[in-house]
Length: 634
Ligand code: WT7
Image (cartoon, rainbow, N blue to C red; front, side, top):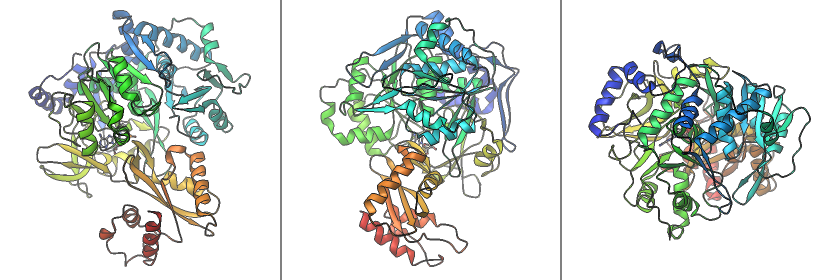
C-alpha cells in the first residue's frame, strides 16, 4: 500500500502536487505495478479534439499486477471469498495461487476456442467465481470483455453484442437469486438468433437445469478446462489498448459502449481503492455491487486484486432468506470494509431494526456508499446502526465513464458530512460551471459538475463512435469533461452531488435513459407517443414515470399497463419497467413541437406550486388533464 495518504495535511499537500505536477504524481503511483516495458510519456491530452493517452509506450498485462505477483509472494492468501445465494451452501475461498491457476487455465480455453488479442467477448453471468475468472482470462489473452448485467433482456444483450461484434459469449445454465431461479442460457439463446458475429458460447454450470446446447457453437466450461494446461503467459498489451467495454445509458439514443484501457484503468482503480477505503493487508472487503456494473469491475475485481486484497463476491440479494443477510455475511466472514448502495440501505432500513438484532458487526471498520445521492436519513441510519458511530462513511461519487472514484472522503482522514461526497481525490480537478459554461468560483455555490484535467481512469472513447464520445462529454462545455451531474460546493468547499441535470434517471443506482424507455414503450402496440421522467421514490431514489398516449383509450387500464411493462421488460429488461404509467391524450408541447419535460417532471413530482407559466404552450389545456390523471393515480 505504497501510495496511501495518511493524514489530512498530507492529503492537502499531495493534492497540491497532483495539480502542479500531475505527470510526476501519476508516474510515482504507476511505478507500483508490474510493467513489461515502462512508459515513454506519462500523458498526452486534448479535450477539444478529444484524445487522451496515459503511460504511452508502456506495455503490460493487468493480470500480472492482479495475480502473478500475489500468487508468487502470498500464494495462500484468499483473493476471492464467495458467498452463495443459499446461506446453507458452503462458501468458497480462492487463494491467489488458485485464482491464478484457474484464470490461466480458462485463458487457454479462450484461446482454444478462437479468442485472441482485441477480440470482444460478451459475458452474461450471475455472481459466481467463474464470472471474475472470465473477466481476468479475457484480460490475460488480451481480449476485450463486455459484461452485460443479468437484469437485461435478450434484446439488450443482442444490441450490445452487435454493437461491438463479440465473437463469443460466456454464460451459465442458470442463476439463483433469492428464491428465484433465472434462466441465463435461454436468454442468451434468444439473443443469439440475431447475432451473426458470435461463433462460440461457453456455458458454466450453476443450476444444471436443462439447456439447449448447439453443436459446434456451445461448449461446457467444465468440459473445456479438462483439455488445457494451466500454463498461460500473459499477452503483452499496450497501456492504451482497450481492456473492456461497458455499456451505459445516456440522455439520447442507445446505450454507449464506454471503453477503458489497460494501463490507466489499472492505475486509477487501484489507487482509488487503496486510498478511499484505506485498505490494510489482511482486511476482508465486501462490495455488494454486481460485476455487471462498473462498481463491480473496479471495486470487486480489478482494484482489490491489484492491491492483493481479500475481496468478497455475493451471489444473492440483501433480502434472502431475510433482510438480515448482509449483516450475517459481515459476521460470518468478519468483514472489515463494506461498500453498498443507498437504495439497499434505504430498503433494509425499511424492514426495521429487528433484522439487526443479534448481529455483531464489530469487525466493521469502514463503510462506503455509491451509485446515487445518499439522503441524510439513510446516511444517519447507516452510521448509527451499521457503523455504530465508529466507522467512517465514504460517500463515493463517480461514474462508469470515470473508471474509479473521483470525489469521496478518504476513510478516517477526511471529516465526513452526511450526504456530501466531500473532497476530490488527489489527481481530480472538479470545476462548477453555469449553463453558459462560465466557471462558478468560490464556495456556497451550485452548478454543473465538470472535470478540467484528465485522470488515468477517464473514458477513452465510445466503442465504434468516437464522435459520440466527443459530443457527449467534451463539447457541451468547451475544454471540459461534463459529468451530467448537478453539484453544490458548500462553505467548506465540500461537494454534494445533487443528481443528474440531463435526461438520465437513477433508479436503485441503475442508470436509465428516459429516451430508451420511451423507445421501448413506443414499440408497444397501440401506443402513439410517450414521455418518461424521473420522480422521487422512497426506496429506489428515483422512480420511472411514463406518460403514454394510445390510439384508442385502453378498455382495461390495469391490463394495458401490465402489457406495457412486459414490452419494456422484453426490449430493455425488468430494471427499466416504469413504476407509474399514466395514460394521457396529449403531451405539453412548445410551439416548435418539443415536449416540455419540465412540466411533466413537475406533475410527476407533485410540484404543482412551481409549475411556472404554461400559457405559451401549444396546448396549455393539456396541463389540467395531466394533473387530474396524476391525482387519480395517487
Ligand atoms: C451516476 C453514474 C459510480 C458507479 C455506479 C454508478 C450517480 C454515483 C454517486 C454519489 C450522488 C452519485 C451520479 C452519476 N452517482 N455515485 N456518491 N452521490 N450521485 O455508475 O451507472 O455510471 O452512474 O450515478 O448521478 O453521474 P453509473
